[in-house]
Every structure is written in structure tokens, then in C-alpha cells.
Amino acid sequence: MTYQETRDAICDVCHKMWQQGWVAANDGNVSVRLDDNLIMVTPTGVSKSFITPQMLVIADMDGNIIESAEGRKYSSEFKMHLKCYTDRQDVNAVVHAHPPVATGYAVAGIPLDDYSMIETVIAIGSVPVTPFGTPSTDEVPKAIEPYLPYHDVMLLANHGALTVGADLITAYYRMETLELFAKISLNARLLGGAKELDKSVIERLISMRSSYKVTGRHPGYRKYSGTEGKEC
Image 1 (cartoon, one colour):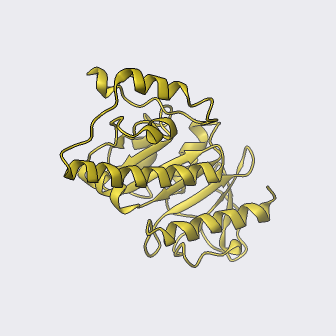
Image 2: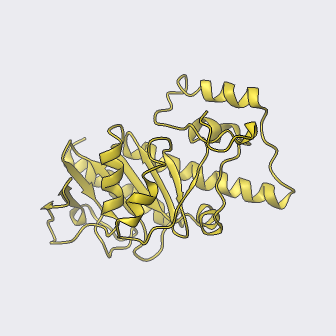
């Protein structure tokens, strides 16, 4: 996409996030990798409902602002975005939001790591809760670092959710899938608990990712095997 098309796409995603109720006030941030050294990112202090293309900031991988038509500063969470791009060359977009139900799990410290819904197994795998990190500090990049090699979707303890993707729409879709799964998981808990899929079914679903052209990394934890931390 051209820079203008990228600006328009970021604004579209921001507006959708606000319409979905995933952000309030100045919450959330979105970025796209333009090339090996440039990132387009949402500015700090602006509601995602009001954001316009000219508000977006272009910065390099060292955090230097290269272009800011309105003299705005980038999101205070830019360090978290840079960590995703530095550690994952396959990542070209990052979305951070506070979807209410998924964030409820993050606040409760409960990972969404069961394999009970077939679409979720294929699309995002298990979703861990990363350790707490003070927003806008180096604590957040350090907290997500151990999980980045294995997960495209993470819950940030007492904070919100983070998704990454090969492109912006993929990262946005993963946030949608996360919040829907969180809602379904909560309903299942109210009804007595989710029934996890059989191990053979889980492995078959995981093997189907390539045929569905699901990109990224979704190993998850083989909770069903009784071995915490074992990759699928």
C-alpha cells in the first residue's frame, strides 16, 4: 500500500476498535511497518474515534520521529510496538486495545489457553497472560519478550490485549477473534466450564492452519497433555 492508503487503513481500524467498544478516551494504539526502518503509528492523546490520517506519526526503529504533520508525538506504548518488530521479522502490524471481556481475563490473570473452540484453535491458538509491566516503560517490552517467539496474541496482565500480524487486517482480525473467544469462554464458565476438544482433534485442527492460509505462530500450551509449557 501507499503511505496514504496505510494511513487510511490505520484510521479505519482505529474507528472500528472504538465502535466495538475496545477502547475509551485515549486508549489503544496501532502501528504498521513501512519498511525495514520506518513505522507508522498512532499519536498519543487522541481518541481512536477522532483520529485522522494526518495525525499519524512516522518514526524509525530508534524512536526518532521522521514525519509528523501536526507535530504530534507517537503513542506512549511505542516501545512495545518496536519490540514486536525487532523480535519478529514476520510481523508488519501491531494492535493494542482493551476489549472488555478479554481484558477481564487479563485483569483476573486467567489465560485463554484451553482448546475448546475449533475456530480459535486454528486462528490464534492459546493466549497467555504476560507478566505485569508499567505502561510506557521498558517493563512492557521485557514482559512480552518470552512470549513473542511463540504467540501472535497475548493478554497483558492488568492492562489489555496485544495482537500482531503479517499485515494490519490480520492483526485486527486476531483481536476480534480474541474478544469473541473471551465472551464464549466466559459464558462457558457460567454454564459449568468449557469442554476441551480431544487431543487428536486439536492436533488435526492445528495441522489445518496451512490449508486455511493462517500465518504467524500459534503453538500454545498443551494443557490437555498435562505438561505446562510444552509447545504444540
